[in-house]
Each structure stands twice: as structure tokens, then as C-alpha cells.
Length: 67
Image (cartoon, rainbow, N blue to C red):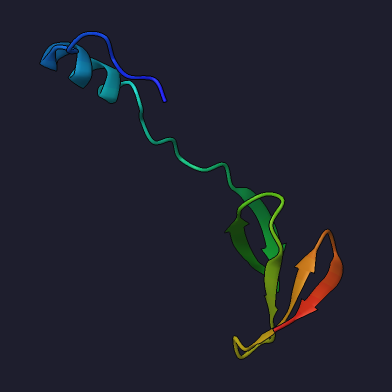
């Protein structure tokens, strides 16, 4: 495992850490039962009936798993 040769200054440490920023996830907009739903791309989504009960998981229009 690599070991640092010299002490890194507080300024450099904080500058390096501040470069890492969270980014907002990209969402996909779909229409489901007359309402707009936003979901993550390339993820299986839960299909619900009109009462809101989970029925199964769907991916690319195909049933992939039971809930």
C-alpha cells in the first residue's frame, strides 16, 4: 500500500475534497395510468394497480419478477 512521502497541507486537502460534488440523477419521464412518473433509467420499476398495490416488476415493457 502506498504511503504519503510528505504531509499534505490543510488548504490542499480541503481543495481536493471540495472538488467532489454530488450530481442530480438523470430521470426518465413516463406516462402511467394517466399520470406522469419519473424513474431512474435502466432500472426495473414496480407496476401497481389502481389502488396502489404492487403487482410485479417490469423492465423494458416485460415482466421480470413478482413482488
